[in-house]
Image (cartoon, rainbow, N blue to C red; front, side, top):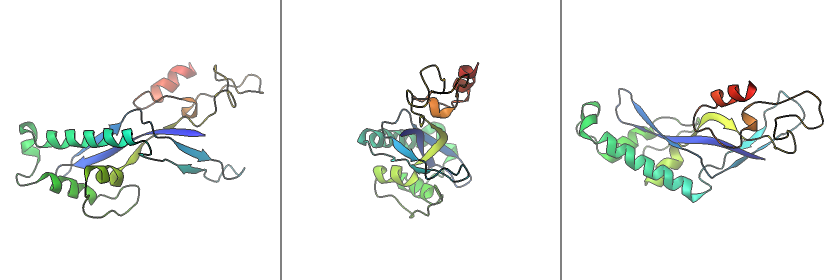
Length: 171
């Protein structure tokens, strides 16, 4: 079952706070969700497969390059320590725990930086099998008078928080 989650990497530009997130919009990489057993209290097994498609990694690298260029611009000069190098910015970012994983103090490349700092942006969707669980009108197959409108039924990301899309579908 294919699960899609938008994901992002982050660049910190000051020790006093400030984050710029780079979001991979419409990632090609897909993970999967497996129901472990019939106990509704047990969590499913989720595999995200971040960057399994090379194009997603290249999008991330280009995004990080744009962020670093922006942070180095005159407009951001008062928000960054004057002597910070690009590597200092990335290294500072590596000190933040991501996904509860302790990372090293440096990334050897922008590709590695993307991999080291990737995380979901909280809006999982796409786990419901359209045509097997629900039909194209969101009716549960084999059950009269029941529809499902939730994030699992979204096959394509609305590109932002899906709440508005789901509210619209619910109406």
